[in-house]
Amino acid sequence: MTHDRPRVLFVCTHNSARSQMAEGLLRAAAGERYEVDSAGTQATAVRPEAIAAMREVGIDISAQRSKTLERFMGEPLEWLITVCDQAREACPTLPGVARQLHWSVADPSAVTGDLEQRMAAFRAARDELADRIGEFLEPDPPAPSTT
Image (tube, rainbow, N blue to C red; front, top):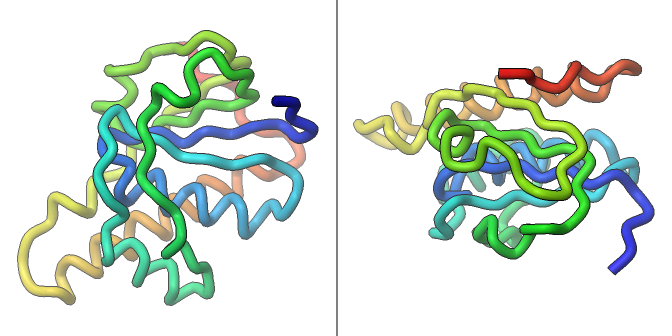
């Protein structure tokens, strides 16, 4: 498979919230500039709260599916961006990755309470990811992490 655009892969443990939201946000913000995917060290399901939080900003991620990291092993990737500390520890580097970043974003799925409390956590994660993606898309992308 050939790839005409730089590929970005967002990675989180379960590929259910943060990495899924990041995938949707970058795809919406960058248009056709990047080929964007997300994966997890384990596959589960996209959280309904993540879908709802993204819908609030006009981005539909309801068709996205949770995937494992294995399907991307050895494929050329311009960027691998981990969005949780556990994923960073689980995959410090992968073959075929040109540059890597780590964004430590709090896990909204870990928040308990009523729906409004949970949604507040998903909105906070979404907004933090949107800010990070805005910085990523600036003319000079951030330098790869060295730690």
